[in-house]
Picture 1 (cartoon, helix red, strand yellow):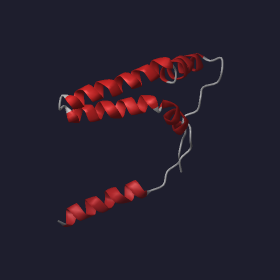
Picture 2 (cartoon, one colour):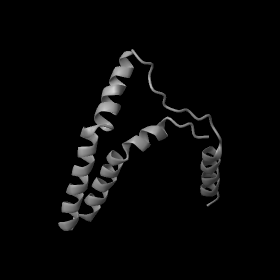
Picture 3 (cartoon, one colour):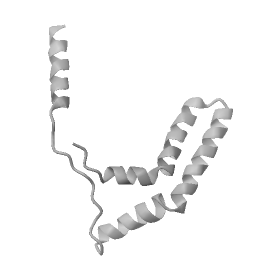
Picture 4 (cartoon, one colour):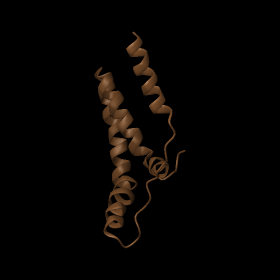
Length: 98
């Protein structure tokens, strides 16, 4: 029992140690990474493709819930909510959290 208490205390100590926070920044304009970021995030995720995919996920989740597939429907709802709120998620990834 004493070893378990020491292990739990060690894990909690490691989790509570404050470290540096890093934020994801948009790549510099004109670079290859910016072109990939622009296509993947701005045109697909935040564009009409991402919105349609989010709405489709919600429709599929409704069908799954009607068929009593509730656990799978919860996962699909979470994915659809992520797609529909992608602009907020992208902004949050660029925020420095201390």
